[in-house]
Length: 290
Image 1 (tube, helix red, strand yellow):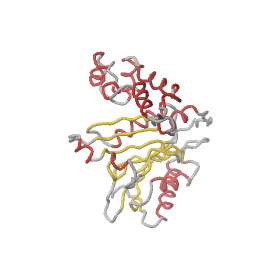
Image 2 (spheres, one colour; image 1 turned 135 degrees about the horizontal axis):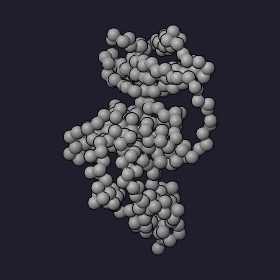
Image 3 (cartoon, one colour; image 1 turned 120 degrees about the vertical axis):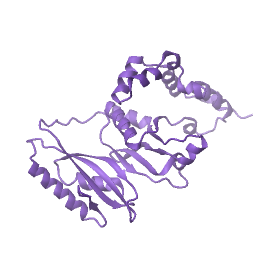
Image 4 (cartoon, rainbow, N blue to C red; image 1 turned 180 degrees about the vertical axis):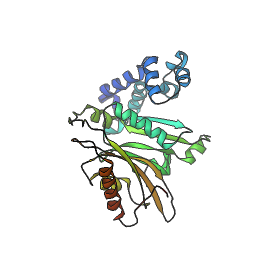
């Protein structure tokens, strides 16, 4: 008779860490402080963290804890199974019912900022027929969450077919983040960059591009125009603008380390951005009156 996995190997370290997370609880005041910063009302906060339900961990309500699941599974699997297939990929996730994409994006930005992860941006994503993401997300309303050029998760609308399956009428938006990637990034030593004593200026710009143009293409073209462009943040996507086009809107942050930028200098930089973007075939910057 073949030996079972539990007779030869068991991931004690990983399972112990999961169990510690599942059995730990923050104080109500700590929870309230953080959710208030996210704009959740005090009443909702206190109702949600009522002592009668606070200690019913969501994992316990839905399925057995990690230790019980791991022991049961390891008792059935053969000892020669690939060990990396036994361990679950740890994800951090959340969802909002009846909200919108950018409301939840604000929550994700807040969480990542709190743990010291910078350089976050959102890229368009299209799942293939072989991709498991296709079953979960709306086919055209999903974005990859990236840090620099590394994908760390997804954010988008839950598939209408999935909502229908579970009888949910309202729109549902969700996100998921790779826990191990977050843990690694949060623990990496950050390079110190001197903070400018001069204020930053923010200008908005919207550009109409063909549907197949990726967000990172536009971001890179803007960011490399001038060293005075400190950051570029996508804040709106408007799909299906006739002729297979879409509109991408960005906040552009300008800042100098040696002086306060004048309106004239900012106008010059904005015009330079417009000219650079419109050099690309099929790209057009939207004017205020449009």
